[in-house]
Image (cartoon, rainbow, N blue to C red; front, side, top):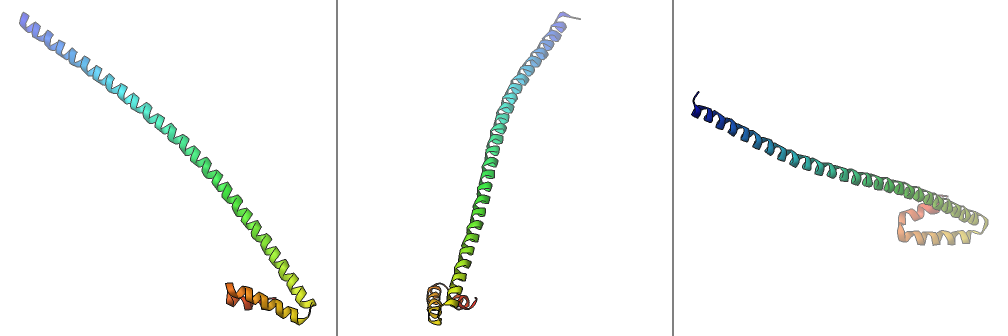
Length: 129
């Protein structure tokens, strides 16, 4: 082989080696960029997981609070209903024990009070018991 042919081969090999080196360097740089991106995305995922856990905890607290409020409302309604039934019993008993004039007066007062709110229910409530 001639010397110029050998130099051509050597220069071609050098070019291929330089190309390989630059390709390896480029791949390493891209790998570092991708690793940095992966680390950033993992951090985002952890932050979102933390936020989701906080929201789930808050949601549970709100659900418990709502359940307690519903229970309190139910209890309050029961107490009001019991008081109302007690008052109705007392009124019914006083109507039976006292004269008819007082009973008419109570019925008239009840009809006046209820007529402001619901006229049709005033007559019904006076005759229901």
